[in-house]
Image 1: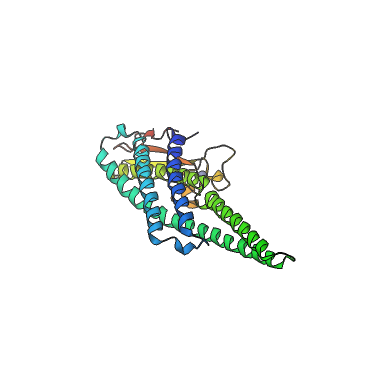
Image 2: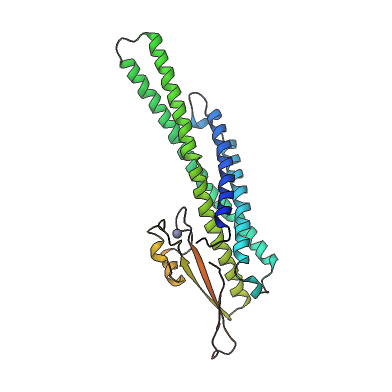
Length: 272
Ligand SMILES: [Zn+2]
């Protein structure tokens, strides 16, 4: 069960935005790479623009999801924490996190593009060697075959960029992972504020919850139902534990009475 209201719709929206950026970048990359393609033709300006587009899109999404997750923590029961606090925390977190996420993302994209260009080079040179080795071809036939081999390699390059570096699958993986991260951050941010506001009168615990379906991975499965003191040993930052992780936390907050003999008030603050 999704932990966040309309979580799948929110993921879809982000995935679509990232995919649009990817498609534009892929088309531009194919033009810039040139003929024969050379990865060095993709300028710093191209990569910076891609990084900025991704960062702005992710930051806006993270800001929004952080706020939603923060508000879902039964905020109305804790009026000391106002919107200003939430917005400041969300803005700071989203700006930092989006930058942090985009740097390795661009690095990985560069690697995937370089690999596609290398494959292109190799397939053209292998085809050229085979044409030269073939007996009885006229110079015109050799040239024709070489042109055909280049056409095939160009097509393959396009498909590789479409299927890997700038793929829909990758856009979706980023959307899922970063949505999970923003949910956890919003909740952790809220709990941090709560602990500061109710200094000494509050205790909280969080339980790791997986989607509990057949897609749950072997990394998260053993954490299902485990409290913070256990899951933090395995993975201190909370969900996501890996790309495409859809786990979430369930929080229980105890409001301690001034008189320690009384039972604490237990409030489950997240809605699964
Ligand atoms: Zn998970």
